[in-house]
Image (spheres, rainbow, N blue to C red):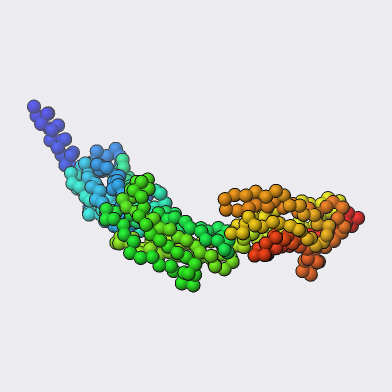
Length: 394
């Protein structure tokens, strides 16, 4: 009986010494010392030590579903110490993607818990990623030296335009073109359009906008959308040749999306656009560069003349005039679509062409092709050529 009593006392004494040692270890070196949470590197607690902290958490992931751009969010993660020694925790500053992380207390006693609050702001959509925020917490649990707390969900706009940008490519100077823009509202309050403005006042007379209700069937096709409008944007004739930019400013009744901006870009071209099949064409100067050509070899290039505008069916290409005269040009068979007429053109420098320099500028004469259109309101097509025929005897 005395032997059993002695053994029991020894066990109790050993446990008391162990707990006291752990508490002393924590008090003397909570960070950076033996048994504490180091400033750099993993914790130093011996995993085989029976007196040690043990991190527990119901879930390290939080899914909020969806929220709108411009809203704030936060969530409390509860960390618990299921061990028999104090648990130290701190934020790893190098691995935080969030607005703020607040730790309720850095020391969690055995059987107690502490809250880690992660805050974030949905200023923009996160590249399609569902991971909105995260923070890594370092601990003195030798079996779980760090834990990543993750916030998942979807950030969507409260209202938006589809498409987000309007592109008017190859707009004929005399052409009027209309495109449709769908305006979606994703909040419970129905989307209302309070007004529409154009940013560039210099070209407002060439744009026309009109709003009408978006059919319910189209609203239902858009995920999460609850209301919508249809915006028709028309570019009217009269814009100068070349590139243009405009921006449509749509004012709404949505607090987190009071303005929807729709950029408009495009290019106004003549009724006839020249397209080269292959390299060497400079659209800004209307020049086709063929480069040096060995006499006896020759070269062939394919071009397309694309006619748009109200007179496209009235254009009849030909005759063709070439400088120099040995340049051979053949017109192909017209192809007509709903909005354009396309004429294939074959340009050939024959094999038996004489030596010549038509590089232009100070390097030689200027070569060009003039193709009549047969219509008084459509000017002739001019294609400049840059080439030199080199004698094989050189």
